[in-house]
Amino acid sequence: MELTLADIVLRVRSVLLPMLLTGIAFFLVLNVQEYWQHWRPVTRELPLWLFPIAALVSLQFNRSRLAYLAILLVTFYCMNRSIIIDSKYLLTYKVPIFLFGSLSMSLLLLMKDRGIASIHGFLAFFTFMACAGLTFNIETLLNHSNKLLTTPLAIDDVTLTFWAATAIIISIGMLVKNTLTTTTISLAFILWSLLYFQPHTIPIDIALLGIAVLIFLSVLFDSYHLAYRDELTGLPSRRALYNLVLSLSNKYCVAMIDIDHFKKFNDTYGHDVGDQVLKLVASRLSKVTGGGKVFRYGGEEFTIIFPRKSVEQTLEHLEAVREEIQNYEMVIRNENRKNTDKSARNKGNSKNKTVSVTISIGVAQHERKQDFDKTLKAADVALYKAKKQGRNQVCS
Ligand SMILES: Nc1nc2c(ncn2[C@@H]2O[C@H](COP(=O)(O)OP(=O)(O)OP(=O)(O)O)[C@@H](O)[C@H]2O)c(=O)[nH]1
Image (cartoon, rainbow, N blue to C red; front, side, top):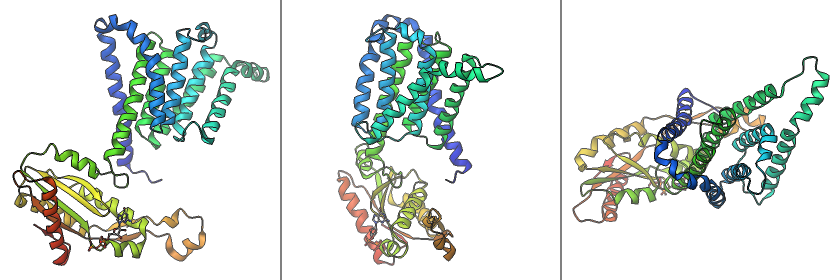
């Protein structure tokens, strides 16, 4: 995987930002205790209800890792409240429970969401059981190994080392694959560690309530993302376009963009290269100036909305983006690089290709009391004109 400095900065930012916001939220909550202290009887009950609901919602949206996290934490809270299991076990098994939780969270971070009632679910279950076996026998294992060592190890040092190892796994995992789910798991790990090392900083019900809310937010934002983002290009989808239209005033412009001869391009270079080009074109289009909002309309077609602009005001911005794409030499990763087939590489196929494409653009202005679809159709007619006149141009 190629990671550029910009990628790393972006990932660190997307890791730190949610953490900072959660930190601020907890700081505020802890500093205005007088406002919510009388709600404590409610906050003490809420995790018992919210975690099972969060687990069910997560499963419904195929977020099995968040479901496991919710199950882990509600079990812990039930122990804390002496529901089903006596809370005295929390004291007796304080270290193993802490280590089991930490290890489970680091595993959750590395796993994929692959359902609970599946072969992967069984494997995950047995892995968690193995972790429980290891952590709940840590003292016995330590006693055995101490017999072989000249300087015996203390349980506190082992716990700290074990926890530090899980913290490192979680940090690396976050940087390699940063999603809302991994951020939620990492935040849960931080709070879990805080509850162990500084148990009086945050009341347990408030900390767990925070995690339950994070699980809900994570599932909610993820599903929003799924519904309104185009998976290939990362641009807002056609559904998001129609959502935006509802909030537009009377004055705006619609531009329809189509990649020229894309069928031929696909036939020459293959569908995968076509997909890469779509992504690169999308990333250039998204930098359009003049306040344009870019959407993937479908296939090789994109739409740009310019709120409060006339056609004349959009032309320079559209021309600029058309010219930029025309001059953009796109470096295409050769998939054979991943291939272990050495003969393919020896034929010189491992080199990256450079390709370029052009786009045609049709733009139309929204008329008073006109339907959005009519404006879109007018932009489509202008696009057809651009194609007919030889492509690689903007028409209105
Ligand atoms: N790789 C790839 N190709 C796509 C995708 N969506 C649509 N296409 C291809 O885009 C091509 C569109 O071709 P046409 O609509 O015939 O038009 P064109 O070849 O671009 O020609 P003009 O628009 O007339 O310049 C088809 O070959 C589709 O298969 C996609 O998501 N990925």
